[in-house]
Length: 185
Ligand code: ADP
Image (cartoon, rainbow, N blue to C red):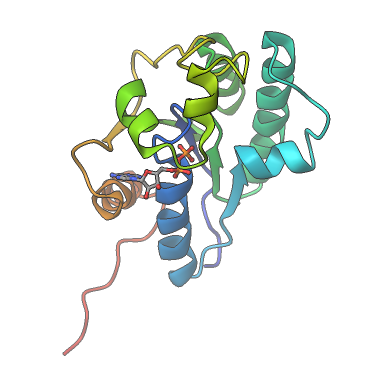
């Protein structure tokens, strides 16, 4: 896509809420349209950009500020970005919003602790409930839900594809991506 518009779809939500799953679908759809979209996934970032950081408030804030820094660099140069990290603290997300202004689109990937624990994709909730993992978001560490996100994905009720479609429709609506041309018969 020539002359793409930069923006950041900033996902926030509990572990297992569906951030990675939905981000992968949106990424695929944008790439299929020729976009140079980049994804900053929390788990991936912690393996490289934030390697060595733990889960104290200070380390979590540093991790999120790094993600915001890179998202800002890319998006201000016309690269669409999707971030998929828990980002539990409102204040740090608001900092990212402050930095990126209109380019920042907050997406609350919403599912209750109970549902995320039932899914328990990585087996982490079981360990957290047993006390084997300290500082686990939603169990033994805070999660501050966004009061005014641009979009909410209700992953207890919507299929991942529906959530992804909602995001694509929002981006089209704001003319951040071109509307898909009607298929020619
Ligand atoms: P996160 O990145 O938020 O930690 P993941 O995407 O890794 O979450 O895991 C979410 C899990 O929930 C996946 O196993 C996914 O298949 C499942 N899931 C069930 N329903 C949904 C939904 N509507 N949206 C997203 N994920 C869903």
